[in-house]
Image 1 (cartoon, rainbow, N blue to C red):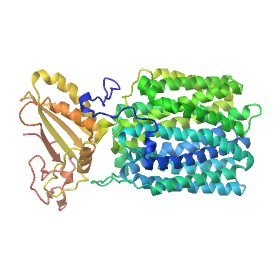
Image 2 (cartoon, rainbow, N blue to C red):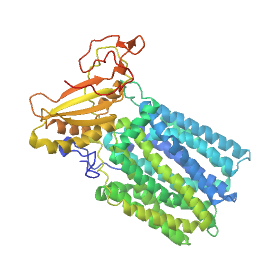
Image 3 (tube, one colour):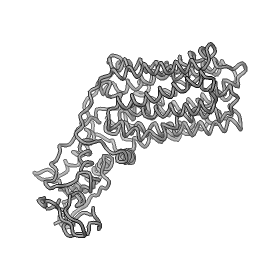
Amino acid sequence: MLQPVSRQSDLTLEKTAVPPRPENVSTWAPLSIPAFRIIWMANLFANLGVWAQSVAAAWVVTSAQASPVMVAMIQVAAAAPLVLMSIVTGVIADNYDRRRVMLFGLFIEVLGGVFITVIAFMGMLTPTLLIASILCVSVGGAITTPAWQAAVNEQVPRNLVSSAVLLNSVNYNAARAIGPAIGGMLLAALGPAWIFLLNVLCFCTLIWALWRWRRAVPEKHLPPERLWEGIKAAIHFTQYSSVTRLIMLRSFIFGISASAIWALLPLLAHDHPGGNASLYGYMLGGLGVGAIAASTLVNRARRRLGSSRLISVAAMTLGGVMLVLGAANTLWAMFPALIIGGSCWIAAVASYNSSVQILVPDWVKARALALYQTALYAGLTMGSFLWGHMAESLGTQTALLMAGALLMVSALMFWPSRLPALDSDSLMGAPEARIEAPDFDFDPARGSVMVTIEYRIEADQVRDFARAVRPLRRLRLRNGAKRWSLYRDIETRDLWQEVFLVPNWLQHLRMQDRQTLADRAIIERVAAMHIGTEPPRTRHGVSYRTARYEGEGATLRPVQTTARDDQAPWAGEDPHANPDSPRPGR
Protein backbone atom coordinates (compact mmCIF):
# COMPACT_ATOMS: atom_id res chain seq x y z
CA MET A 1 0.00 0.00 0.00
CA LEU A 2 1.28 3.46 -0.83
CA GLN A 3 2.10 5.48 2.27
CA PRO A 4 1.53 9.26 2.20
CA VAL A 5 4.47 11.60 1.84
CA SER A 6 2.65 13.98 4.17
CA ARG A 7 -0.90 14.90 5.08
CA GLN A 8 -1.11 16.54 1.66
CA SER A 9 0.15 13.50 -0.23
CA ASP A 10 -1.32 13.00 -3.67
CA LEU A 11 -0.64 9.27 -3.76
CA THR A 12 -2.72 8.05 -0.83
CA LEU A 13 -4.55 4.89 -1.83
CA GLU A 14 -6.88 2.54 -0.03
CA LYS A 15 -5.39 -0.88 0.55
CA THR A 16 -8.33 -2.61 -1.10
CA ALA A 17 -7.66 -0.73 -4.35
CA VAL A 18 -4.14 -2.13 -4.78
CA PRO A 19 -3.88 -5.49 -6.55
CA PRO A 20 -1.65 -8.05 -4.83
CA ARG A 21 2.01 -7.85 -5.76
CA PRO A 22 4.39 -10.87 -5.98
CA GLU A 23 6.72 -11.03 -2.99
CA ASN A 24 10.25 -12.16 -2.37
CA VAL A 25 11.51 -11.24 -5.85
CA SER A 26 15.21 -12.04 -6.18
CA THR A 27 17.60 -9.25 -7.14
CA TRP A 28 18.85 -11.42 -10.04
CA ALA A 29 15.39 -12.48 -11.31
CA PRO A 30 15.31 -10.00 -14.28
CA LEU A 31 18.33 -11.78 -15.82
CA SER A 32 16.00 -14.71 -16.60
CA ILE A 33 14.35 -12.47 -19.23
CA PRO A 34 16.34 -12.96 -22.50
CA ALA A 35 15.93 -9.41 -23.83
CA PHE A 36 16.98 -7.82 -20.54
CA ARG A 37 19.88 -10.25 -20.11
CA ILE A 38 21.40 -9.57 -23.54
CA ILE A 39 21.05 -5.80 -23.23
CA TRP A 40 22.40 -5.92 -19.67
CA MET A 41 25.52 -7.82 -20.75
CA ALA A 42 26.13 -5.48 -23.70
CA ASN A 43 25.65 -2.51 -21.40
CA LEU A 44 28.27 -3.97 -19.08
CA PHE A 45 30.82 -3.84 -21.91
CA ALA A 46 29.77 -0.26 -22.73
CA ASN A 47 30.13 0.79 -19.09
CA LEU A 48 33.55 -0.88 -18.91
CA GLY A 49 34.62 1.25 -21.87
CA VAL A 50 33.21 4.41 -20.29
CA TRP A 51 35.04 3.89 -17.01
CA ALA A 52 38.29 2.89 -18.71
CA GLN A 53 38.01 6.06 -20.78
CA SER A 54 37.26 8.18 -17.69
CA VAL A 55 40.60 7.16 -16.19
CA ALA A 56 42.42 8.10 -19.38
CA ALA A 57 40.57 11.40 -19.71
CA ALA A 58 41.13 12.45 -16.09
CA TRP A 59 44.77 11.48 -16.21
CA VAL A 60 45.41 13.26 -19.53
CA VAL A 61 44.09 16.48 -17.99
CA THR A 62 45.85 15.96 -14.64
CA SER A 63 49.22 14.99 -16.12
CA ALA A 64 49.15 18.10 -18.32
CA GLN A 65 49.46 20.12 -15.08
CA ALA A 66 45.98 21.53 -15.57
CA SER A 67 44.34 23.43 -12.72
CA PRO A 68 41.88 21.72 -10.32
CA VAL A 69 39.09 23.65 -12.04
CA MET A 70 40.06 22.09 -15.39
CA VAL A 71 40.06 18.61 -13.80
CA ALA A 72 36.62 19.23 -12.29
CA MET A 73 35.40 20.47 -15.70
CA ILE A 74 35.48 16.85 -16.91
CA GLN A 75 32.51 16.17 -14.63
CA VAL A 76 30.87 19.40 -15.77
CA ALA A 77 31.25 18.48 -19.45
CA ALA A 78 29.86 15.01 -18.83
CA ALA A 79 26.83 16.27 -16.89
CA ALA A 80 25.89 19.59 -18.53
CA PRO A 81 24.02 18.12 -21.57
CA LEU A 82 21.96 15.91 -19.25
CA VAL A 83 20.96 19.00 -17.30
CA LEU A 84 20.12 21.12 -20.35
CA MET A 85 18.60 18.55 -22.72
CA SER A 86 16.99 15.80 -20.64
CA ILE A 87 13.50 17.26 -20.45
CA VAL A 88 13.38 17.69 -24.25
CA THR A 89 14.66 14.18 -24.91
CA GLY A 90 12.28 12.90 -22.23
CA VAL A 91 9.32 14.30 -24.20
CA ILE A 92 10.63 12.53 -27.30
CA ALA A 93 11.07 9.24 -25.42
CA ASP A 94 7.51 9.40 -24.05
CA ASN A 95 5.98 10.01 -27.48
CA TYR A 96 8.08 7.91 -29.86
CA ASP A 97 9.70 4.46 -30.06
CA ARG A 98 12.22 4.43 -27.20
CA ARG A 99 14.38 1.84 -28.91
CA ARG A 100 14.94 4.08 -31.93
CA VAL A 101 15.62 7.07 -29.69
CA MET A 102 18.29 5.06 -27.85
CA LEU A 103 19.91 3.91 -31.09
CA PHE A 104 20.07 7.48 -32.37
CA GLY A 105 21.69 8.74 -29.16
CA LEU A 106 24.19 5.87 -29.07
CA PHE A 107 25.14 6.56 -32.68
CA ILE A 108 26.04 10.15 -31.72
CA GLU A 109 28.08 8.86 -28.77
CA VAL A 110 30.01 6.52 -31.06
CA LEU A 111 30.72 9.34 -33.52
CA GLY A 112 32.08 11.45 -30.65
CA GLY A 113 34.18 8.53 -29.45
CA VAL A 114 35.62 8.03 -32.92
CA PHE A 115 36.59 11.70 -33.03
CA ILE A 116 38.41 11.49 -29.67
CA THR A 117 40.19 8.34 -30.84
CA VAL A 118 41.35 9.89 -34.10
CA ILE A 119 42.76 13.06 -32.53
CA ALA A 120 44.45 10.95 -29.82
CA PHE A 121 46.22 8.77 -32.43
CA MET A 122 47.21 11.92 -34.32
CA GLY A 123 48.86 13.31 -31.18
CA MET A 124 46.59 16.38 -31.09
CA LEU A 125 44.87 15.61 -27.79
CA THR A 126 44.90 18.57 -25.38
CA PRO A 127 42.89 19.04 -22.15
CA THR A 128 40.67 21.68 -23.75
CA LEU A 129 39.97 19.61 -26.86
CA LEU A 130 39.37 16.50 -24.76
CA ILE A 131 36.80 18.24 -22.56
CA ALA A 132 35.06 19.66 -25.65
CA SER A 133 34.91 16.15 -27.14
CA ILE A 134 33.49 14.72 -23.91
CA LEU A 135 30.83 17.42 -24.06
CA CYS A 136 29.84 16.27 -27.57
CA VAL A 137 29.69 12.62 -26.47
CA SER A 138 27.51 13.66 -23.53
CA VAL A 139 24.99 15.15 -25.95
CA GLY A 140 24.38 11.63 -27.28
CA GLY A 141 24.12 10.40 -23.71
CA ALA A 142 21.51 13.05 -22.95
CA ILE A 143 19.42 11.73 -25.86
CA THR A 144 19.84 8.10 -24.79
CA THR A 145 19.41 8.32 -21.00
CA PRO A 146 15.68 9.19 -20.56
CA ALA A 147 14.64 6.56 -23.11
CA TRP A 148 17.05 4.02 -21.57
CA GLN A 149 15.71 4.60 -18.06
CA ALA A 150 12.06 4.47 -19.12
CA ALA A 151 12.52 1.35 -21.28
CA VAL A 152 13.28 -0.86 -18.26
CA ASN A 153 9.59 -1.64 -17.74
CA GLU A 154 9.37 -2.67 -21.42
CA GLN A 155 12.09 -5.30 -20.90
CA VAL A 156 10.79 -6.95 -17.70
CA PRO A 157 7.38 -7.47 -16.00
CA ARG A 158 6.22 -4.71 -13.66
CA ASN A 159 6.98 -6.68 -10.50
CA LEU A 160 10.63 -6.99 -11.57
CA VAL A 161 11.20 -3.30 -12.36
CA SER A 162 12.75 -2.45 -8.99
CA SER A 163 15.16 -5.40 -9.22
CA ALA A 164 15.98 -4.51 -12.84
CA VAL A 165 16.81 -0.92 -11.83
CA LEU A 166 19.06 -2.25 -9.08
CA LEU A 167 20.75 -4.66 -11.52
CA ASN A 168 21.44 -1.78 -13.89
CA SER A 169 23.08 0.01 -10.97
CA VAL A 170 25.08 -3.14 -10.21
CA ASN A 171 26.10 -3.24 -13.87
CA TYR A 172 27.28 0.36 -13.74
CA ASN A 173 29.20 -0.15 -10.50
CA ALA A 174 30.70 -3.48 -11.53
CA ALA A 175 32.11 -1.66 -14.53
CA ARG A 176 33.26 1.08 -12.17
CA ALA A 177 35.19 -1.52 -10.17
CA ILE A 178 36.78 -3.27 -13.16
CA GLY A 179 36.89 -0.56 -15.83
CA PRO A 180 39.30 1.81 -14.05
CA ALA A 181 41.71 -1.07 -13.42
CA ILE A 182 41.56 -1.96 -17.12
CA GLY A 183 41.99 1.70 -17.97
CA GLY A 184 44.94 2.09 -15.64
CA MET A 185 46.73 -0.95 -17.07
CA LEU A 186 46.07 0.03 -20.69
CA LEU A 187 47.07 3.60 -19.96
CA ALA A 188 50.41 2.48 -18.57
CA ALA A 189 51.00 -0.07 -21.35
CA LEU A 190 49.52 1.48 -24.50
CA GLY A 191 48.49 5.08 -23.91
CA PRO A 192 45.13 6.90 -23.93
CA ALA A 193 44.35 6.50 -27.65
CA TRP A 194 43.87 2.73 -27.33
CA ILE A 195 41.51 3.21 -24.38
CA PHE A 196 39.37 5.58 -26.42
CA LEU A 197 39.28 2.97 -29.20
CA LEU A 198 38.22 0.30 -26.70
CA ASN A 199 35.33 2.52 -25.60
CA VAL A 200 34.09 2.86 -29.19
CA LEU A 201 34.15 -0.93 -29.70
CA CYS A 202 32.30 -1.53 -26.44
CA PHE A 203 29.55 0.87 -27.45
CA CYS A 204 29.17 -0.95 -30.75
CA THR A 205 28.19 -4.10 -28.81
CA LEU A 206 25.39 -2.17 -27.08
CA ILE A 207 24.12 -0.84 -30.40
CA TRP A 208 24.05 -4.42 -31.70
CA ALA A 209 22.06 -5.64 -28.69
CA LEU A 210 19.47 -2.87 -29.01
CA TRP A 211 19.25 -3.36 -32.78
CA ARG A 212 18.25 -7.02 -32.34
CA TRP A 213 15.73 -6.25 -29.56
CA ARG A 214 12.23 -6.56 -30.99
CA ARG A 215 9.88 -4.94 -28.49
CA ALA A 216 6.13 -4.76 -28.81
CA VAL A 217 5.48 -1.10 -29.59
CA PRO A 218 2.32 0.06 -27.76
CA GLU A 219 -0.38 1.20 -30.14
CA LYS A 220 -1.07 4.91 -29.88
CA HIS A 221 -4.53 6.20 -30.74
CA LEU A 222 -3.64 9.88 -30.43
CA PRO A 223 -1.02 11.97 -32.24
CA PRO A 224 2.24 12.62 -30.34
CA GLU A 225 2.38 15.68 -28.13
CA ARG A 226 4.15 18.64 -29.58
CA LEU A 227 7.46 19.41 -27.92
CA TRP A 228 6.29 22.45 -25.96
CA GLU A 229 3.07 20.67 -24.96
CA GLY A 230 5.07 17.76 -23.64
CA ILE A 231 7.39 20.00 -21.62
CA LYS A 232 4.44 21.87 -20.11
CA ALA A 233 2.73 18.57 -19.26
CA ALA A 234 5.87 17.36 -17.46
CA ILE A 235 6.23 20.60 -15.50
CA HIS A 236 2.52 20.55 -14.65
CA PHE A 237 2.77 16.95 -13.48
CA THR A 238 5.78 17.77 -11.30
CA GLN A 239 4.04 20.81 -9.83
CA TYR A 240 1.21 18.63 -8.50
CA SER A 241 3.20 15.46 -7.74
CA SER A 242 4.66 15.68 -4.25
CA VAL A 243 6.71 12.50 -4.80
CA THR A 244 8.46 13.84 -7.91
CA ARG A 245 9.17 17.20 -6.29
CA LEU A 246 10.65 15.59 -3.18
CA ILE A 247 12.89 13.24 -5.18
CA MET A 248 14.13 16.11 -7.36
CA LEU A 249 14.91 18.31 -4.37
CA ARG A 250 16.69 15.59 -2.41
CA SER A 251 18.70 14.33 -5.38
CA PHE A 252 19.78 17.89 -6.26
CA ILE A 253 21.04 18.59 -2.72
CA PHE A 254 22.66 15.14 -2.60
CA GLY A 255 24.40 15.74 -5.94
CA ILE A 256 25.93 19.06 -4.86
CA SER A 257 27.73 17.51 -1.89
CA ALA A 258 28.41 13.99 -3.21
CA SER A 259 29.97 15.35 -6.43
CA ALA A 260 33.16 16.15 -4.51
CA ILE A 261 34.16 12.50 -4.25
CA TRP A 262 34.11 12.13 -8.06
CA ALA A 263 35.45 15.56 -8.98
CA LEU A 264 38.36 15.52 -6.52
CA LEU A 265 39.37 11.86 -6.55
CA PRO A 266 41.89 12.33 -9.44
CA LEU A 267 43.52 15.15 -7.46
CA LEU A 268 43.55 13.06 -4.29
CA ALA A 269 45.35 10.26 -6.15
CA HIS A 270 47.73 12.67 -7.89
CA ASP A 271 48.66 14.47 -4.64
CA HIS A 272 49.34 11.24 -2.79
CA PRO A 273 53.05 10.26 -2.52
CA GLY A 274 53.74 7.92 -5.40
CA GLY A 275 50.36 8.68 -6.98
CA ASN A 276 49.85 7.55 -10.57
CA ALA A 277 47.14 6.46 -12.98
CA SER A 278 46.99 2.99 -11.45
CA LEU A 279 46.29 4.40 -7.97
CA TYR A 280 43.40 6.46 -9.34
CA GLY A 281 42.02 3.37 -11.05
CA TYR A 282 42.30 1.37 -7.83
CA MET A 283 40.47 4.11 -5.93
CA LEU A 284 37.61 4.05 -8.42
CA GLY A 285 37.70 0.26 -8.18
CA GLY A 286 37.28 0.50 -4.41
CA LEU A 287 34.10 2.53 -4.91
CA GLY A 288 32.88 -0.03 -7.44
CA VAL A 289 33.64 -3.01 -5.19
CA GLY A 290 31.64 -1.41 -2.40
CA ALA A 291 28.70 -0.83 -4.74
CA ILE A 292 28.70 -4.44 -5.92
CA ALA A 293 28.98 -5.77 -2.38
CA ALA A 294 26.03 -3.67 -1.22
CA SER A 295 23.77 -4.39 -4.21
CA THR A 296 22.31 -7.58 -2.75
CA LEU A 297 21.55 -5.78 0.52
CA VAL A 298 19.77 -2.71 -0.87
CA ASN A 299 16.32 -4.32 -1.21
CA ARG A 300 16.55 -5.80 2.28
CA ALA A 301 17.63 -2.46 3.76
CA ARG A 302 14.84 -0.67 1.88
CA ARG A 303 12.21 -3.04 3.29
CA ARG A 304 13.54 -2.47 6.81
CA LEU A 305 14.18 1.28 6.74
CA GLY A 306 12.01 2.56 3.91
CA SER A 307 13.33 4.47 0.90
CA SER A 308 13.62 7.86 2.64
CA ARG A 309 15.46 6.58 5.70
CA LEU A 310 17.77 4.43 3.57
CA ILE A 311 18.70 7.45 1.45
CA SER A 312 19.33 9.56 4.56
CA VAL A 313 21.46 6.89 6.26
CA ALA A 314 23.45 6.34 3.05
CA ALA A 315 24.01 10.09 2.60
CA MET A 316 25.17 10.57 6.19
CA THR A 317 27.54 7.62 5.91
CA LEU A 318 28.91 8.88 2.59
CA GLY A 319 29.49 12.26 4.25
CA GLY A 320 31.50 10.47 6.94
CA VAL A 321 33.52 8.71 4.23
CA MET A 322 34.39 12.06 2.67
CA LEU A 323 35.53 13.33 6.08
CA VAL A 324 37.84 10.32 6.38
CA LEU A 325 39.24 10.92 2.87
CA GLY A 326 39.85 14.55 3.73
CA ALA A 327 41.58 13.78 7.01
CA ALA A 328 43.50 10.54 6.30
CA ASN A 329 46.74 10.29 4.37
CA THR A 330 47.26 6.51 4.44
CA LEU A 331 45.88 4.09 1.89
CA TRP A 332 44.96 1.68 4.72
CA ALA A 333 42.31 4.17 5.83
CA MET A 334 41.31 5.48 2.41
CA PHE A 335 40.51 2.18 0.66
CA PRO A 336 38.05 0.84 3.31
CA ALA A 337 36.41 4.27 3.30
CA LEU A 338 36.06 4.15 -0.50
CA ILE A 339 34.46 0.69 -0.34
CA ILE A 340 31.93 1.95 2.21
CA GLY A 341 31.38 5.06 0.07
CA GLY A 342 30.56 2.94 -2.99
CA SER A 343 27.98 1.02 -0.95
CA CYS A 344 26.34 4.27 0.17
CA TRP A 345 26.34 5.70 -3.35
CA ILE A 346 24.48 2.76 -4.88
CA ALA A 347 21.99 2.65 -1.97
CA ALA A 348 21.07 6.31 -2.45
CA VAL A 349 21.06 6.54 -6.26
CA ALA A 350 19.29 3.18 -6.81
CA SER A 351 16.59 4.21 -4.31
CA TYR A 352 16.06 7.53 -6.07
CA ASN A 353 15.85 5.83 -9.46
CA SER A 354 13.54 3.03 -8.27
CA SER A 355 11.20 5.55 -6.65
CA VAL A 356 10.76 7.45 -9.93
CA GLN A 357 10.50 4.25 -12.00
CA ILE A 358 7.76 2.77 -9.81
CA LEU A 359 5.87 5.76 -8.40
CA VAL A 360 5.37 7.63 -11.70
CA PRO A 361 2.82 6.55 -14.35
CA ASP A 362 4.00 5.33 -17.75
CA TRP A 363 2.72 8.29 -19.77
CA VAL A 364 5.21 10.67 -18.13
CA LYS A 365 7.89 8.22 -16.97
CA ALA A 366 10.69 9.29 -19.34
CA ARG A 367 10.05 12.96 -18.57
CA ALA A 368 9.95 12.36 -14.81
CA LEU A 369 13.19 10.38 -15.03
CA ALA A 370 14.65 13.18 -17.14
CA LEU A 371 13.69 15.77 -14.51
CA TYR A 372 15.16 13.59 -11.77
CA GLN A 373 18.36 13.15 -13.79
CA THR A 374 18.40 16.89 -14.46
CA ALA A 375 18.15 17.63 -10.74
CA LEU A 376 20.83 15.07 -9.82
CA TYR A 377 23.26 16.10 -12.56
CA ALA A 378 22.60 19.79 -11.97
CA GLY A 379 23.74 19.17 -8.40
CA LEU A 380 26.75 17.15 -9.62
CA THR A 381 27.67 19.85 -12.15
CA MET A 382 27.35 22.75 -9.73
CA GLY A 383 29.09 20.78 -6.99
CA SER A 384 31.99 19.74 -9.24
CA PHE A 385 32.57 23.34 -10.24
CA LEU A 386 32.25 24.53 -6.62
CA TRP A 387 34.57 21.93 -5.10
CA GLY A 388 37.09 22.40 -7.90
CA HIS A 389 37.35 26.08 -6.97
CA MET A 390 37.51 25.21 -3.27
CA ALA A 391 40.30 22.72 -3.90
CA GLU A 392 42.24 25.30 -5.90
CA SER A 393 42.08 27.88 -3.13
CA LEU A 394 41.98 25.76 0.05
CA GLY A 395 43.38 22.39 -0.98
CA THR A 396 41.85 19.06 -1.99
CA GLN A 397 41.50 17.60 1.49
CA THR A 398 39.90 20.75 2.93
CA ALA A 399 37.35 20.75 0.10
CA LEU A 400 36.51 17.10 0.85
CA LEU A 401 36.03 17.89 4.55
CA MET A 402 33.64 20.74 3.75
CA ALA A 403 31.68 18.64 1.23
CA GLY A 404 31.35 15.75 3.71
CA ALA A 405 30.08 18.04 6.47
CA LEU A 406 27.54 19.62 4.09
CA LEU A 407 26.27 16.20 3.00
CA MET A 408 25.74 15.07 6.59
CA VAL A 409 23.86 18.25 7.49
CA SER A 410 21.58 18.02 4.43
CA ALA A 411 20.80 14.35 5.19
CA LEU A 412 19.73 15.30 8.70
CA MET A 413 17.50 18.06 7.33
CA PHE A 414 15.60 15.60 5.10
CA TRP A 415 15.31 12.89 7.77
CA PRO A 416 11.62 13.71 8.56
CA SER A 417 10.55 13.45 4.89
CA ARG A 418 8.87 10.29 3.58
CA LEU A 419 8.63 8.58 0.22
CA PRO A 420 5.85 6.04 -0.40
CA ALA A 421 6.62 2.33 -0.26
CA LEU A 422 7.48 1.05 -3.73
CA ASP A 423 4.46 -0.54 -5.42
CA SER A 424 3.95 -0.33 -9.18
CA ASP A 425 0.57 -2.10 -9.33
CA SER A 426 -1.41 0.96 -8.26
CA LEU A 427 -0.05 2.92 -11.24
CA MET A 428 -1.10 0.41 -13.88
CA GLY A 429 -3.08 2.07 -16.64
CA ALA A 430 -6.85 2.18 -16.22
CA PRO A 431 -8.01 4.45 -19.07
CA GLU A 432 -11.42 6.05 -18.80
CA ALA A 433 -14.00 5.15 -21.43
CA ARG A 434 -13.81 7.48 -24.41
CA ILE A 435 -16.63 9.96 -24.83
CA GLU A 436 -18.06 10.85 -28.21
CA ALA A 437 -16.63 13.87 -29.96
CA PRO A 438 -18.94 16.85 -30.59
CA ASP A 439 -21.27 16.32 -33.54
CA PHE A 440 -20.34 19.63 -35.17
CA ASP A 441 -17.26 20.45 -37.20
CA PHE A 442 -14.46 21.50 -34.83
CA ASP A 443 -10.66 21.52 -34.45
CA PRO A 444 -9.61 19.18 -31.59
CA ALA A 445 -6.24 20.94 -31.20
CA ARG A 446 -7.71 24.42 -30.61
CA GLY A 447 -9.73 26.12 -27.93
CA SER A 448 -10.37 24.63 -24.52
CA VAL A 449 -12.70 22.04 -22.98
CA MET A 450 -14.77 22.64 -19.86
CA VAL A 451 -15.78 19.54 -17.89
CA THR A 452 -18.50 19.86 -15.24
CA ILE A 453 -19.37 17.00 -12.88
CA GLU A 454 -22.41 17.37 -10.59
CA TYR A 455 -22.51 15.66 -7.21
CA ARG A 456 -25.36 15.46 -4.70
CA ILE A 457 -23.87 15.44 -1.20
CA GLU A 458 -25.77 15.13 2.07
CA ALA A 459 -25.20 17.89 4.63
CA ASP A 460 -23.46 15.63 7.15
CA GLN A 461 -21.00 14.45 4.46
CA VAL A 462 -19.80 17.90 3.34
CA ARG A 463 -16.67 17.91 5.50
CA ASP A 464 -15.63 14.43 4.32
CA PHE A 465 -16.42 15.41 0.73
CA ALA A 466 -14.20 18.49 1.01
CA ARG A 467 -11.33 16.31 2.23
CA ALA A 468 -11.85 13.74 -0.53
CA VAL A 469 -11.74 16.29 -3.37
CA ARG A 470 -8.30 17.61 -2.39
CA PRO A 471 -6.44 14.66 -3.95
CA LEU A 472 -8.98 14.78 -6.80
CA ARG A 473 -7.94 18.37 -7.55
CA ARG A 474 -4.28 17.38 -7.66
CA LEU A 475 -5.15 14.39 -9.86
CA ARG A 476 -6.93 16.55 -12.46
CA LEU A 477 -4.17 19.17 -12.54
CA ARG A 478 -1.42 16.55 -12.56
CA ASN A 479 -2.94 14.74 -15.55
CA GLY A 480 -3.47 17.79 -17.74
CA ALA A 481 -6.18 20.19 -16.53
CA LYS A 482 -5.09 23.83 -16.46
CA ARG A 483 -7.73 25.04 -13.96
CA TRP A 484 -9.90 23.35 -11.36
CA SER A 485 -12.69 24.64 -9.12
CA LEU A 486 -15.45 23.31 -6.89
CA TYR A 487 -18.76 25.20 -6.54
CA ARG A 488 -21.79 24.79 -4.31
CA ASP A 489 -25.20 25.79 -5.66
CA ILE A 490 -26.77 28.63 -3.61
CA GLU A 491 -30.33 27.37 -4.11
CA THR A 492 -30.00 23.58 -4.20
CA ARG A 493 -27.77 23.19 -1.15
CA ASP A 494 -26.83 19.56 -1.75
CA LEU A 495 -25.66 20.23 -5.35
CA TRP A 496 -21.90 20.57 -5.91
CA GLN A 497 -20.15 21.13 -9.22
CA GLU A 498 -16.59 20.12 -10.00
CA VAL A 499 -15.38 22.25 -12.92
CA PHE A 500 -12.03 21.94 -14.68
CA LEU A 501 -10.64 23.31 -17.93
CA VAL A 502 -8.41 21.35 -20.32
CA PRO A 503 -6.32 23.13 -23.00
CA ASN A 504 -7.99 21.32 -25.95
CA TRP A 505 -9.94 18.22 -26.92
CA LEU A 506 -6.83 16.17 -27.69
CA GLN A 507 -5.48 16.95 -24.24
CA HIS A 508 -8.81 15.89 -22.74
CA LEU A 509 -8.53 12.52 -24.52
CA ARG A 510 -4.98 12.19 -23.24
CA MET A 511 -6.23 12.84 -19.71
CA GLN A 512 -8.61 9.92 -20.08
CA ASP A 513 -5.79 7.66 -21.34
CA ARG A 514 -3.50 8.70 -18.47
CA GLN A 515 -5.79 7.46 -15.72
CA THR A 516 -4.31 4.79 -13.43
CA LEU A 517 -5.74 2.46 -10.81
CA ALA A 518 -4.66 4.92 -8.12
CA ASP A 519 -6.46 7.72 -9.96
CA ARG A 520 -9.57 5.62 -10.34
CA ALA A 521 -9.58 4.86 -6.60
CA ILE A 522 -9.55 8.60 -5.84
CA ILE A 523 -12.35 9.30 -8.34
CA GLU A 524 -14.47 6.44 -7.04
CA ARG A 525 -13.96 7.55 -3.44
CA VAL A 526 -15.47 10.94 -4.31
CA ALA A 527 -18.25 9.45 -6.44
CA ALA A 528 -19.23 7.08 -3.61
CA MET A 529 -20.41 10.09 -1.57
CA HIS A 530 -22.88 11.06 -4.28
CA ILE A 531 -26.52 10.32 -3.34
CA GLY A 532 -29.22 9.32 -5.77
CA THR A 533 -29.94 6.48 -8.14
CA GLU A 534 -28.04 8.02 -11.06
CA PRO A 535 -24.25 8.47 -11.09
CA PRO A 536 -22.80 12.00 -10.99
CA ARG A 537 -23.78 13.90 -14.11
CA THR A 538 -20.91 14.91 -16.41
CA ARG A 539 -21.13 17.70 -18.99
CA HIS A 540 -18.54 18.66 -21.60
CA GLY A 541 -18.34 22.07 -23.22
CA VAL A 542 -15.94 23.24 -25.90
CA SER A 543 -14.80 26.81 -26.48
CA TYR A 544 -16.10 28.55 -29.58
CA ARG A 545 -12.48 28.72 -30.73
CA THR A 546 -12.65 25.00 -31.52
CA ALA A 547 -15.28 25.48 -34.23
CA ARG A 548 -14.34 25.92 -37.88
CA TYR A 549 -16.01 29.07 -39.18
CA GLU A 550 -17.06 30.51 -42.52
CA GLY A 551 -16.40 34.15 -43.34
CA GLU A 552 -14.46 36.78 -41.47
CA GLY A 553 -15.22 39.79 -39.31
CA ALA A 554 -16.66 40.43 -35.88
CA THR A 555 -19.72 38.23 -36.43
CA LEU A 556 -18.76 34.61 -37.07
CA ARG A 557 -21.02 31.61 -37.34
CA PRO A 558 -20.10 27.92 -37.27
CA VAL A 559 -20.29 25.81 -40.39
CA GLN A 560 -22.68 23.52 -38.48
CA THR A 561 -24.78 24.53 -35.50
CA THR A 562 -26.17 21.18 -34.40
CA ALA A 563 -24.92 20.73 -30.85
CA ARG A 564 -26.04 20.30 -27.28
CA ASP A 565 -26.96 23.52 -25.52
CA ASP A 566 -23.90 23.33 -23.24
CA GLN A 567 -21.52 22.97 -26.19
CA ALA A 568 -22.83 25.42 -28.79
CA PRO A 569 -20.53 28.30 -29.76
CA TRP A 570 -22.14 31.68 -29.25
CA ALA A 571 -22.85 33.35 -32.56
CA GLY A 572 -22.55 37.11 -32.81
CA GLU A 573 -19.88 37.46 -30.08
CA ASP A 574 -16.65 39.30 -30.26
CA PRO A 575 -14.24 36.38 -30.82
CA HIS A 576 -11.60 38.03 -28.63
CA ALA A 577 -13.69 38.73 -25.53
CA ASN A 578 -13.18 36.18 -22.73
CA PRO A 579 -13.01 33.24 -25.15
CA ASP A 580 -12.76 30.51 -22.54
CA SER A 581 -15.06 31.91 -19.86
CA PRO A 582 -17.77 29.49 -18.69
CA ARG A 583 -21.26 30.47 -19.86
CA PRO A 584 -23.99 31.16 -17.28
CA GLY A 585 -25.87 28.06 -16.19
CA ARG A 586 -29.59 27.57 -16.47
